[in-house]
Length: 384
Ligand SMILES: [Zn+2]
Image (tube, rainbow, N blue to C red):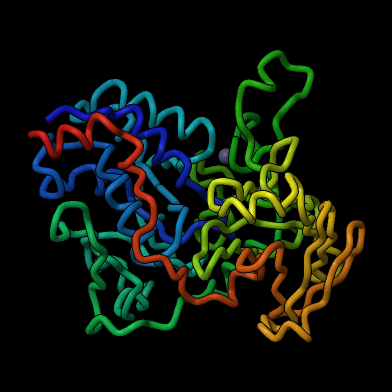
């Protein structure tokens, strides 16, 4: 069976994130690529990351659930992968989409602890149990195993399948992620500032914005660049962020981050990039009602989240998510209001935006697969 590998990898790329506010799980790529039992294929294949990404989306019942991928540097020269796969992983690393470290050590478990996300692994974390006793808590380690009818499903390594309390960031994680960190290596794309703007190479690399910096590694208690091993300098407080979700007819389609630095426009097809585009999920009536840019979210000091209507037809706020139409607060074009903790913004009936922590489950039974982006592969699977 041959694969349209490039198309699958493109689709997977959209689900990679080292942003602490968005990543929903962390994986060691060198482990995942060797799950040969998932597809009966080559000893190593980067396409298996797609199976695991799909399994995570189904596990959280949400579209577009991003994965924090850590790869040991050795994987970039692992000849069990094709040269194309190695090239793509190297590009992901250069663009800061995956984290490449000289040696893995317990980096994957460190990230899981600092961010409060599960590790997708078939291991039991035995070698880290002394330092990280939470590996024995239900739901903190999830193993991707072959599911019925193809694909992968995530199984908790501990517990009897009960829904565990979602993990939270460790206190250390909260402290580290409240600061912006700076790496002395001039072209560090995770903890750099973009280097010399006059350099001819300055625009050739993608640098992570301070708001989205991954967590530092701790070496003997010292915040350290996971890639370069260099001691990081504290470059000041990190801008506050709030994570919001787009929820359409009860299904969470997309999470996004609003920071004090960067307001975000949500609409049918916001102009100028950076906005959240809803068009693909809307009914025809909703598409007619919702403007290209419909509402703008911003974060002011002390965590005050505001919404401004920038639409033609207007929007509304449902206080504490109330479905009572008498309580709905209409928003006219140009109007700005601050949002209470559980308030939901309504762009059109059933098209909502609110704080992500309000909605425990994504409500989606069959999230879109990254593997579906490879038509010829799907075809071959069925025609044999
Ligand atoms: Zn660095």
